[in-house]
Image 1 (cartoon, rainbow, N blue to C red):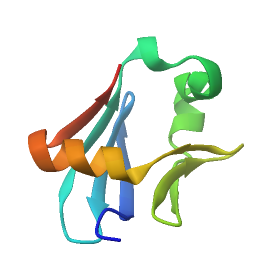
Image 2 (cartoon, one colour; image 1 turned 90 degrees about the vertical axis):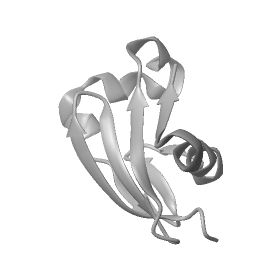
Image 3 (cartoon, rainbow, N blue to C red; image 1 turned 180 degrees about the horizontal axis):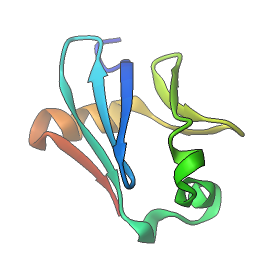
Image 4 (cartoon, one colour; image 1 turned 45 degrees about the vertical axis):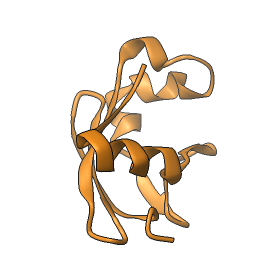
Amino acid sequence: MHWDVIEVVPEGDLRLKVRFRDGTEGRVRFERSHLNGVFTPLSDPKFFRQVYVEDGALTWPGDVDLAPDAMYAAVRTTGEWVLK
């Protein structure tokens, strides 16, 4: 799918640069208020930097992942997807 993520680069505190299959690029940013439940481990910078792409989705160890379709829509519209 065109919204599959093909590249991710951690850019610092809770920010990622992503590139999608169709060449669209942008950023994903987590606000600390979003780091609860399954996302709690992402508050550890060392864990956060372990992000990788699997089957077109951003993934971390332990089955933490983000669906690329909503991310793509936000990045195409504003250049950034903010998880609040």
